[in-house]
Image (cartoon, rainbow, N blue to C red; front, side, top):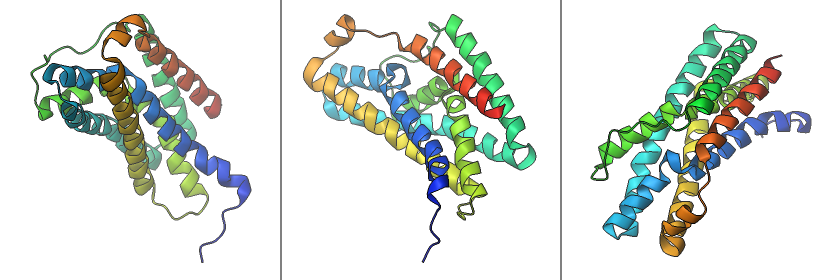
Length: 219
């Protein structure tokens, strides 16, 4: 039998995972992370299958960007103390959030609508990296690694980070798929013209909020 995990530490173990999955859903809702691109391809080709085919490389590119941040976190916790790493991450988040706040209208633009799977993969990787998607969940990734390692749960840090990136990506893919399918099957792009939300400003604000929370945690 596996030893029982004391209920007092359960929230500390679960909250980083909830954050990782929650950010995955948030990234999935953001049209700048890919579902709007996939929807446009589906409408252009008059095929719902085109949407699903586009979402897979988009999710994979996003996962690569987040995975690289996870690797940096894994390397950081081996050579840098957790408090120091938290301060560094908080500083980067606040700086990047401030930059995005005043430059929210800038996006990587290098590809048209006639794209292949490799183009979508690379586009998604660049978008996720440029928007700091991996940086946003870096505090949660540190929490996953630290929580499991500090409570004797025998889950290697590398395995925990891999599973966290996987859970984040699956949550994002699920939300992207649901949103794109609903808009395609029920509303089309007309709803976006009538009810557009500036997600870039929300994204910048989210970076600042996460940075502030990371700084408060470090202090």
